[in-house]
Image 1 (cartoon, rainbow, N blue to C red):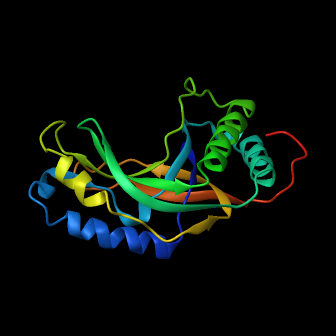
Image 2 (image 1 turned 180 degrees about the vertical axis):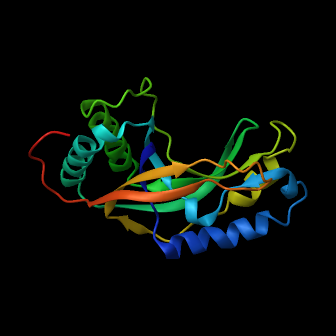
Length: 195
């Protein structure tokens, strides 16, 4: 199964972002972008790829420990940007050190559970909202300019989620990946144990 650890913003913050994305849909070139669907909006912490089901119990236990060792922390949606010509995203502000630590702990939990992970990269907090249907086919700068003023309301990250993704398979244009919650663990303030 295709898994990743994530933070899922609360519905109110997703609605807040939805209002901004609705405005982006009215910009020239918006029809040449593949927009991510609101039910799939999340902050990926550690992408695990295909994970054998036999590893799931140990992975769940280790993610639970990582969550237990991490106190809740505040975040908010903030501004936006692009990765070259390949992705449009909204940024995150708040306790980014705590978010990075949770990402590192999630990655370590997966590795210790036996999940073959890619080499770690510096964590960059973002929430992807769109990708060009064909790389470079759309100038993303006007979309980034529209996102620049985004200053969302603060929320407290209170849980670590393990999500399963189902990539589109029908070949129907516009089909979105589906996501299923496999597990979620409350963030706490304890420090004992290891991820």
